[in-house]
Amino acid sequence: MEHSWHFGPKTLVLMVVSMVRRLSAVFAADVVGLSRMMETDEAGWENEADDN
Image (cartoon, rainbow, N blue to C red):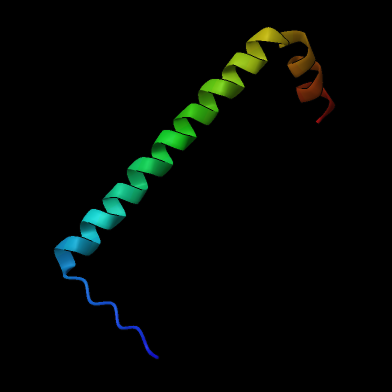
């Protein structure tokens, strides 16, 4: 049994835009979380950065 997916160009563009928005939201939340962790342990992060 073969599946055939047929989407029009508009549908494909909307799907890609939706994926990009979701990934952007995840990335933004990740950056916020990392910033909060760095803020709570600023000395530890500075030492870590100096070691690398």
